[in-house]
Amino acid sequence: MEQIVVRGIAERLLFEAPDSDYRVFRLHDEDDDATYTVTGHGTKPLVGDRLEVKGHWVQHKRYGRQFAADGWSRIIPESVDGIERFLGSGAIKGMGPALAHRVVAAFGKDTMAVLEKDPQRLLEVEGIGPKKLAVITESFYEEKQVNDIAYDL
Image (cartoon, rainbow, N blue to C red; front, side):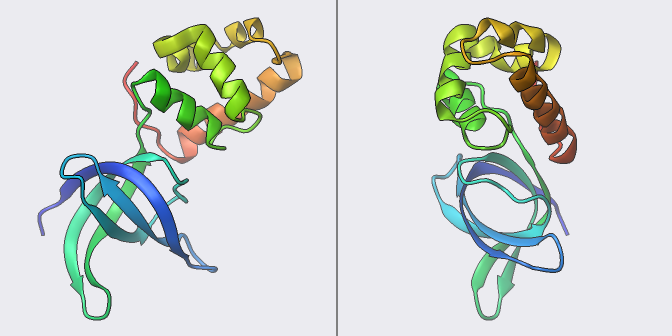
């Protein structure tokens, strides 16, 4: 079966198996402005996550047309607004919406590069001290590793 790649924004988690990493969620496709159901095994997508999903279309006898995912990964947004939404979404421990706003205001489109390559610069932002920096940095690397964040620095 031919594998298809779609990109979109996670809108809502519909189902989460209590005994496995099986998930069902709604994805708003960036290309055709459609919203559809994605099923598969993987890390829990957060509402607002920009995802790249690989898989194929199936017809479920009860739920209709669905995208059966072989896997998905988060895509780091490229716009300043998108970076701020991502950082403030809860994906990175220690950083809520207000702090994400200050960090992005300080570093703009370079924010993700700062987090990846020079996180000590976060100390320039009001509200970030050594302890908070350690939490943010550890969480960022964990998130990157666990969720296979796809981005281009």
